Length: 104
Image (cartoon, rainbow, N blue to C red; front, side, top):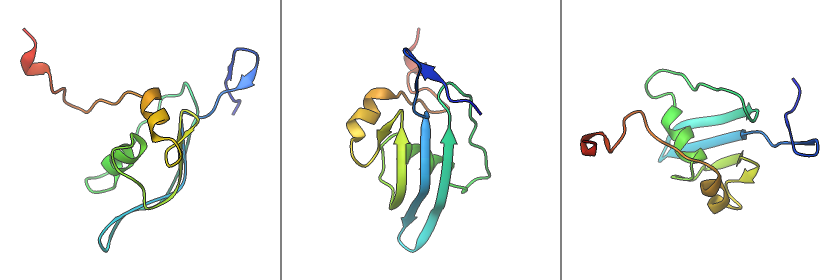
């Protein structure tokens, strides 16, 4: 699959890249080595049954919680090294808007 380029032909980093992403709560492992490579500009859906770890992955990738292991980059920024750069590069919204009741 070709890599997208920006400006002068330099390859753009993937939108999301994870390698061995892990998360546990106590002795309950909820993510056990998640690997993702989502190219910039692509459409990606994260599907699975209740309890599969979808929300946990999104919370980690949006810097709301930390991973217990593995590596992750969002928009070319390393989550562990520079979470502020990740937050500056993304926008996240849930399934339901918190402002719907305020709109007139």
